[in-house]
Each structure stands twice: as C-alpha cells, then as structure tokens.
Image (cartoon, rainbow, N blue to C red; front, side, top):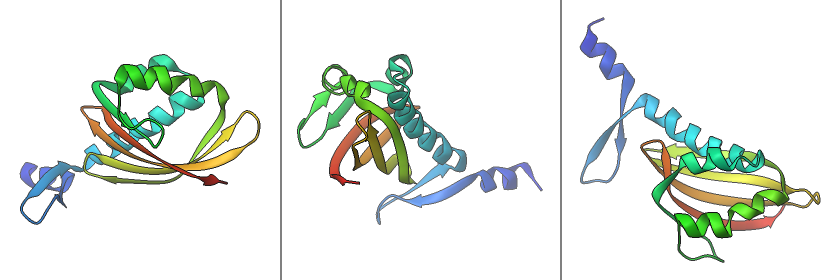
Length: 138
C-alpha cells in the first residue's frame, strides 16, 4: 500500500454543511472524545489542576441558571459543585467533528441522582464551549 493510500485511510469526510465538506483526521475524533471524558473525570475526582488544563482561555459556558459565563466565571460558579459529586456516569456520548454531545447521570454524595445533557466544543485539546441542559431525576 502506498503512503498516500495509508494517509487516506486515516482521514474521513465529515459533512459540515451542504456548502462545504471538511476533512477531519480519523484520530481527531478519539482526541475530542478524550478531552470530554477527561473533563468529567476531573469533576468526579475533584482534580482542579486537570480541569484547568482542559479549559481554554476563551472558554464560554451557558446553562439555564448561568446564561453566559467566561472561564473565570465558570470556575467561580461551577467548580465548587465538585464537592457534592460522588460519581458521574456517561450514558451517551456522540462526536461530530469538534463537537461532543453528552448525556450523563450524576450521583451526589447524598445519593440523589439526576441526568444532564451537555453540548461541548473542543479546539486544540481544550474545551472552548459548554452548553448545559438540565435533566430530570434519574
């Protein structure tokens, strides 16, 4: 197999819109997924250092309670919640290009469980956007 053929096997076409097609490395999907999984693990493990490395300087966060936070606002408002988390179990995770959709079940230290869904965007190995949609009790 030629080198060009090997390179083609590593890349796949992903339709971005009808107007254009982006070529995204196949391994990039795994890297994008890994960034998302590491962020949830950092919360579950109360590892602020790990999370800080995964959050880009221009990070933007939104949820029904926090319509638009920057990186500093996110850490101030959201990070303290790690103290109440016993476990995070990812139920569904879908990657399309640099975007990730995650549905997870969170268990609080009190035993209470609920589900949330999040839409994430990754760039250069870091989260640049997170949109949280609250779910019902599990």
